[in-house]
Length: 275
Image (tube, rainbow, N blue to C red; front, side, top):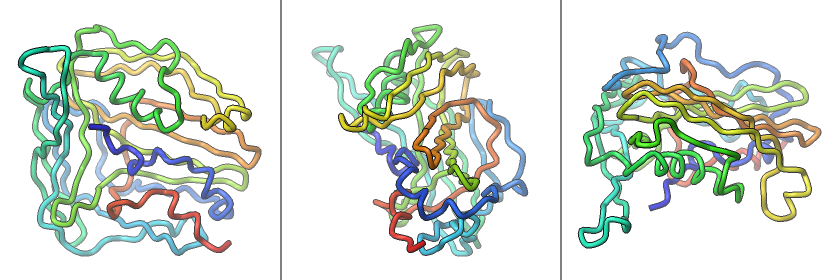
């Protein structure tokens, strides 16, 4: 099953720059508890303010407002690999909910356990495909230059967050901008069964590639050192008024907002704002 990563921010931010470029302030959340990027076997998030997107604004600083309500069931969602009993080269996927939590009076409390062997992808190549290549599928880029994982036998998986009361998504994002650029940062959580390194070389797609359906820009080289257990990875997208875009990954201490996103909504929905 293809992972639904567009809702996590992998929709080009360029489409909303015209409407949000007036803002110059950073959309950060520095008052939240300090986190480490290498989290350990289990993840626990306690007393985090939850936000909602406001699609009817003109200023970047006003794109989120505090959620003050309740949601009784928040869980993690992973894609479980089902190996064919007769042919282990064939497999399918089914979604499985893990962990438990709630939002009470606008504050999130959530616990996500370690992943057992039954929830780990088959091998390192699967991690690369589902965590990077599948997300870049939206840009028609199947192979990030020289992408690799060491050791290659590393197993792992990723988790999304769902509000199972009403099937909304819960994501982590920060938006920031200047007079000439707009950036979005999106936090994703990956679990690995051992310490490993994921590397990729730089990939540059010229503006002319857009005519072939490929998102132009610079896909920055990365070298990600992950520890056994859960890790927080940040994907950053930057778009400028000169149509120069960049996409990068880094292991990062997250201080990003927890944001409720209604099912089917993406950043592209900001485009209807009247400047």
